[in-house]
Image 1: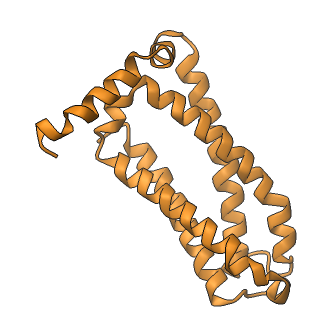
Image 2: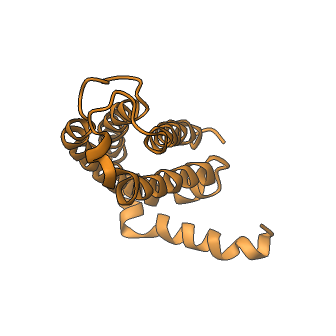
Length: 168
């Protein structure tokens, strides 16, 4: 990006930081630490439960447990975790928008989140529709195993990129 073409982006990020939410996140003594705690707990719920589902989909763990049992019990935890991560992440972003917006890790994190989201849609609106056929098989069909692998790698990549936001 040239300096001139990125000026609108810099202005947008500065505006977010100067908003009442951005000022609150930076100035309220406990705001950022509490948001970080919520973010970490949300990550644990989201990624932890998603990885267990992914391992079952890849046929690596829980081979005796039906896929529908795993998804029925763990995906609600992922949804709660995602809501916590989204809320806390957006609020933290308002507080340090310029630092995050110009971090080399930001496009990686957002891109991997997008990849995970597309993978979720493909899985739930495609592959999972035939789960009744392969629900109890120790090793799901190749499409389900690929979806599990893409999910696991995407979420692990999001975690790594998220940590790098503070350093690059």
